[in-house]
Amino acid sequence: MRLLRTLLYVPGNRPNMLAKAPTLGADALILDLEDSVPLPEKAAARSLVREMLPQILEGARTVFVRVNAHGSGLAQEDIAAVVQPGLAGLCLPKVQDAEGLRTVIAWLAEAEKERGIAEPLGILATIETALGVLNAYAIGSADPRVVGLIFGGEDLSLDAGMMRTEEATELLVARQLVVLAARAAGVQPIDMVYPRIDDEAGLVHNTTVGRQLGYRAKQVIHPRQVPVVNRLLSPSEAEVAEARRVLAAFEEAEREGRGAIALDGKMIDRPIVERARRLLALAEQLEEEKRAEP
Image 1: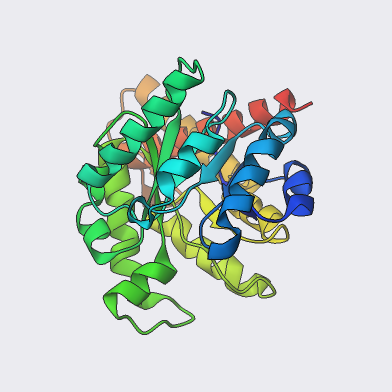
Image 2 (image 1 turned 135 degrees about the vertical axis):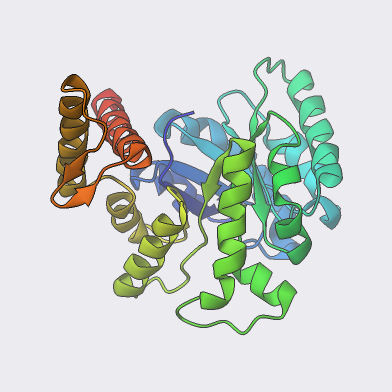
């Protein structure tokens, strides 16, 4: 799967927004049949997404569909309707344990078989309850289909009885636990939504904190959030330059047989060197994907 920094939710009951979504610059689209669709419109949205998916897949490189939750009574019909070749996978809300996840995977496998899809679709599992946070590693490692864990801060705060604040300090522990679970399971952690679409400064702060915690991908809910988050989750020119300096200093020390390395008065150890290598690899991957765009 290509690198994902921004995952943009698109309401599944809005044909104009679905048609426009591939042009909005997000790394991935999540066509939403859950929160953004009122209950009376669920069936119509399901049909609309199914009908428009071929058109959307022509213009967007990575597309997921967020189906309704396992316990909603709607998920199996959602999956049967939307699974088709070219889809990257499903986004599953309110995943609480590996057992429930495996039930949904069985429904997905059945739909893939019916449509002759040989390559298993991926799953983004959303962690947005207290139980889900405690089971996050088990969920992330439950099946090879799981490619990411999404942190759902708003629903989690409701489930856990938290008092929401602008700084979101009440979510820091759970937000970090999801990163750790995802990294331990070998899948991508995807950060929380920032709900204030007109507050760019707040979005910058929220995204920056997420990056400090280990997130390199973020859910977005409005097109204007996309370029801001893409920029913040991409290595800056200054970061790339600094990483190159670190590697150059390390390689020079190795050639000279020196064990201790210092740069600008700071000791450079192997974790810092490896962090520099990873940052440069990320920058190169982004450049390659940019060159590959039509």
